[in-house]
Image (tube, one colour):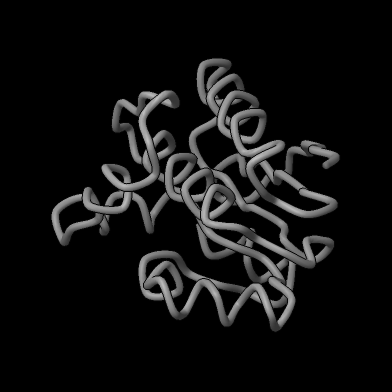
Length: 136
């Protein structure tokens, strides 16, 4: 998995995290750690580009949710299993997270998985980079 970051200026600064490759148990912790690093360095609005991610496992889903919680200002222990993380989705933190994390161009198979587990309703999904950046 490759993880690249770029910064874009709009109404607010937006960081784009572009993931390339399968998002699974072999790399989910790296995704969380690198996103946490960007948050620690001051990034507050994150667009996760999934256009080059053909497969997301349950560990990958947990990493997306954990990253969303980090950018929502919630403490996340990356050593926890995915189960407690998914149980923490609720109406109280959903609004905060939706303001700060959005997804860009998930492939259809990945979008189906996001829909089945409920993350599609939890995170806004965009198909155009400029529109996504302007939405923050």
